[in-house]
Image (tube, rainbow, N blue to C red):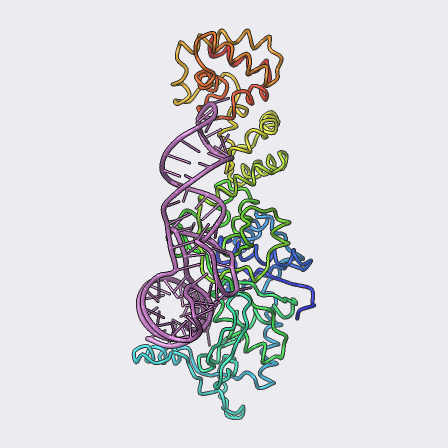
Length: 467
RNA sequence: GGUCCCUUCGUCUAUCGGUUAGGACGCCAGGUUUUCAACCUGGAAAGACGAGUUCGAUUCUCGUAGGGACUGCCA
């Protein structure tokens, strides 16, 4: 179990989009496998026909792709493996580790209601557990495992430590419904086994299930995977993450314009740590990630920290790569795509843009000067700084710029001297200049903009505004 | 109700019996500054509570409180 190549898996059920918690679970599995030269596989748990849709499956795949989590091989459909699951159940029946239960759902429900009313255990004990085959009626039946009744079971979990359950808390859970279809609990075990999964890293809402699933491993005599049940993610208020907090789905974070690298870093750091390291690359995360670094307590989602991390990643991301990400962001949000000129401009402005934006919308807003075209129409805030006095100064500046060599130093010199000649400061002139060049009160440095725009465009914009 | 799990600054966390309990985000003050972002300096800010073990507990044990998960012929 230790020297086998690592195989981890992510097994979402397509009953909804990719939840941010699921995204982190996938990330942990991916990090663990990739850091060890192992495989990371996908299994779609679509056995609930009523709630599973192809759209959801696609949304989950898209979400993982956006996050940059690549998987090995084709995603496995759990539903397509039903025959195999049934075979295993038959095997257990033959081995005597499972039995046929002829109790009807009404009977069981009645029992539970009674139990609840009397405040006794709602664990159903089927009367059919030890009934001989010869005495079985000719009726539909469900197949149940024979759970151990005495003693206790201790499971080692890499995150939770040793967890012990008294066996009388285990029920003879159903593995095959009375219509002959396999149940999730059986399918998971069979699939994990058949797919060679060595490490099961999943949300700790599955911890109790681990004990149930353990019964099937025991019944079949299969090797058990290493378990790691990770704590859940809550909203900023400590309550379950919900719409109220802004976003539960990975796609929503994509739509808000967070860069995938920042998401990976933030999510990895949520519930897992490697000393004081906060900001790291994928390569570092893969190298450092391990089960022992995962904490046991649930963590809250903090948008401020996410933004900070995203800002740091933007700053170090390659210009062209960022441009591609932004184009993908625009496409994903159904925004109008950039034309060639805008793409070129954005790329040229990227060095000064990427250091000041945490999200793509923010970056795009600051890139307005290069995405728009003449005549520049200043927005309300920008217009305020453009009074007649400053227009006059800018008019004076224009011819001087025409004679300037287009370097940062020279531009700074020209603007400063014009400012000085008018008994004002560069700081006072920057606002109006920004308004003229960008039409916005917020933008990169005026000199950076001039450099990106070039002399002709810069002068033209000045003439437009002061002419 | 039952079973299991969790509890260090507001948040994410470090600490693996001995620390002035460290870092990061955020916040506050000051600086820099051309708006935004960034940056620099400083600051406030934590071991849920109560016992026990120990020379010594944030760290180990138990209890209490609070929170969470599970308790389906759902996944």
